[in-house]
Length: 125
Image (cartoon, rainbow, N blue to C red; front, top):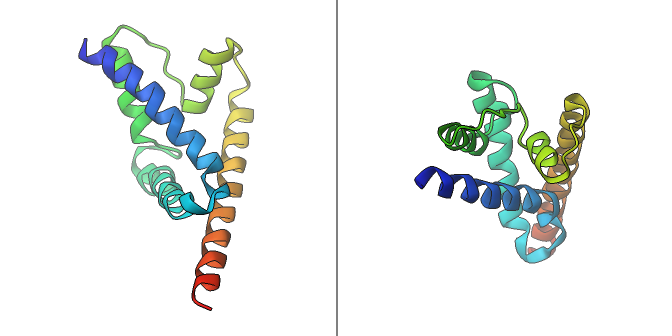
């Protein structure tokens, strides 16, 4: 029962976290939090990724552990690929999904940094 709870929790939490990473920069009230989540994601992918593999995500790792305990063996290297597969039933090209994911991440990271700096400068004028 605990693993089923974790499976549902990670579907909801990780998906919401991902969606926030995509759109959180657009709202002035969430920009600081967005910058924090983008930096946390970057740390996971690029720093922890040194030891665990590029793009490593603790949420994905823990979700896979819960699913494995439930008897699922559908590991994917990418949570986004996994999510797209489960939401649409289509097995998109993994390289294309990874490229798209990285591109969106870099775009939102640049937007977040730029807008946070702009907001900070406006506040301190």
